[in-house]
Amino acid sequence: MGHGAAWRSTPWSCLGLNEDLIVSEATLLEEDLGPVRRLTLNRPERLNALSSALVEELSAALGRAAEDPRARVLVLRGAGRSFCAGYDLKEEAAHEDARGGPPDIAEWRKELESDVARMLEVFDHPKPVIAEVHGYCLAGGCDLMMMCDVAIASDDAVFGEPEIRFGSGVVTMVMPWLVGARKAKELLLTGQDRIGAEEALRIGLVNRVVPRDRLEEETLALATEMASLDPVALTLTKKAINRSLEVAGFREALWANVDLDAVIEASEVPERKEFNRIRREQGLKAAIRWRDERFR
Image 1 (cartoon, helix red, strand yellow):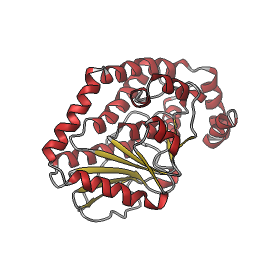
Image 2 (cartoon, rainbow, N blue to C red):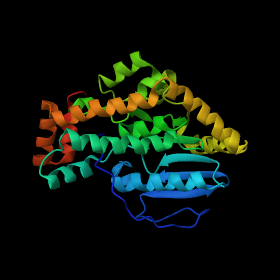
Image 3 (tube, rainbow, N blue to C red):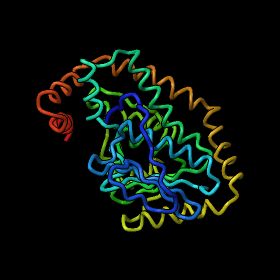
């Protein structure tokens, strides 16, 4: 979906490890399966949209895993029907209404910098991070998946970055680095949001596609295989691969996109104005329906 508001610190209840955290209020579930630390985005009623609270909890969980020698590999997945449908537009709209209008360029840049910094925490994590993807994996959710080191998708997964369809921009411009500039231009300049799992595999968005009923098993098997290897070698090998992207300008490109996206977001182009008008008058669902009906 769209962008998130500036991240706010939220309290985190430190619950015991090695237990499935069945707490309805928790937006992130955390559990250990042997040497595998599994993190579950837990906002199924919102298709695991990235709220500020969820992003902060994920950031804190990543920090704990980095310092815990028992966690050798991380798996990131979503509860309910989807992996993640993007940043929480409902929260963003509420903040905009409370502010009395949209942010200016400087405010947008500050928010987008925070968004990208949080995404880079996955890229920079010292341990391998595997995305276990099913259902919708869109916009900010797609960014999050692409920041993971490996992605395994179920055959029902759907990918895409639809931001341009309502006058918005991509927050974390990762896609060109995975699929190449030519394919990224086709997908991002049309706002495609129905990329099927097999096509995602073909173009390099994901590593494997498995039947939905085998997704958890296959992901855990891969994570366990990685976790059986020397942890120092895992960390340094990931760092070496990431360094090749760094030398090619990966991080600089992400920050350059922040500057350009801030201009896009502050421009209030006609599509965004109409989207926001419908949202204010008829609600967010009606605005999203208007956006999607134009391309269906």
